[in-house]
Amino acid sequence: MYSSTLEAPVLLLGAAHVVDLEGPIRATLQGRTLDAIAVELDDERARALLTEGTPAAPAGGGPFFLRLWAVVQRRLGGELGAGIAGAEMRSAATLAKERGIPLLLIDDPIRETVAHLIGSLSFRERILLVVGSIVGLVIPSRLVRTEIDRYAEAPDDYVGQLRQAYPGVARVLLDERNEHMAARLTEARRNGYGRVAAVVGDAHVRGLADALHRRGVPTETVAFAQLRTVTTS
Image (tube, rainbow, N blue to C red; front, side):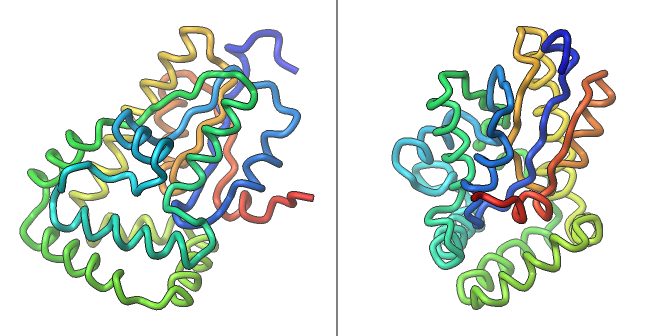
């Protein structure tokens, strides 16, 4: 279809870290020629998730709210069928291994991200994050399913609400990481990995596509709402 790998768009797949998407990811990539598969992980989280199947959080503690979120994701991953939080990243890594192509880790180091985030948050945002984490420990999974469905119907509205309630979080966890991931994908493209499928959290898809376009890199996107409906038969 494309005369060179550098003409091919980067395929961005939007995932939800607590939803099992192995079948849809495999079905979407079936028959597609790829030079590499990229995932929203750094070295530390990849080692934890891909070798131990543990939550992608810093080893040896970490900030209180981050440890709470690791527990929340672990619980919801089990209750919503993913098995473990980040199962879609593990599925992508397995697929790369089966195909004999590189797995690109395109996210920022988690410890640096967390340190930057803590330093950027207002006192109000810190309190809201801790409270939200505590609520996540007890919220029924059926309500989480409902919210996932609502997000899938109007992701832009959800991201807009996030930006309004947590501007520091949105800037550090979305905007800055999007730019950094786009830079790594662009560099990989210069190194010959043009036909890449990148599995990232769905909230990153639009911003990451924009960041790649600013770098002259074409993209193709499959948002979470579309990916979750892909037939796997």
